[in-house]
Length: 71
Image (tube, rainbow, N blue to C red; front, side, top):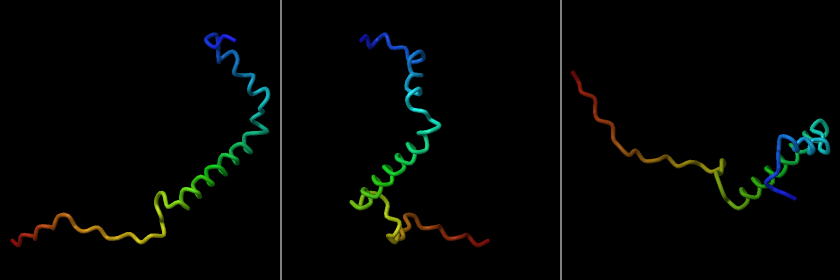
């Protein structure tokens, strides 16, 4: 098998002869969504990432506002 003789435009159609998108696209997308949700749920269980239930602390003001000049 010559790897460098690979011509994707001439040979990639064979994959779609086996995997029909009209049949398998939605189940594949559902499986990908399920895997993504499982990975995110696991990451949140470890405490990695943003926790929307935490109350945000108010950041201190870094610079005070100059008083207004009365004319």
